[in-house]
Length: 159
Image 1 (cartoon, rainbow, N blue to C red):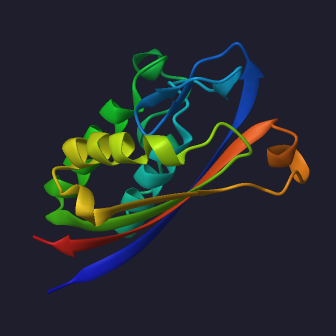
Image 2: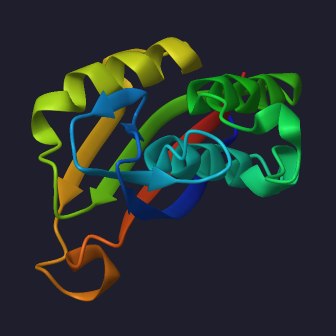
Image 3: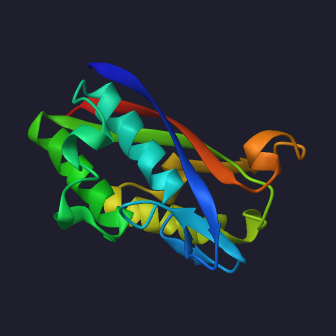
């Protein structure tokens, strides 16, 4: 069996009175992530991890922020499209481990819903998706709530 590991990273600016979508869940908060799509930092990091593992470049290559097709789109759709690209190359997702870094809001209550959304988009069990969150201890742009960061690693296997 052939396996590969991928790593993904994403960051988005936070803006007042903007929707905050993470893992396909809209969070209640006075700020939200800003971007061309719905700016779902977690799903973007996961897409990059998957694409990287399969040697398929990155999310910006496939879903350009200058293409109106992707403007305002749900990142769940981007994740599904990413999985299609992997499937076409004979890869299947083994597992995902992801970390969010933000000061607020609290992520823990929303993790099960995020896992469900991601599992449904990829076609794997929620048991194969780990999501964690931490703060930046009030330091830097994350600590000042100017931005949000996500990291993800994944394992893919030849089908």
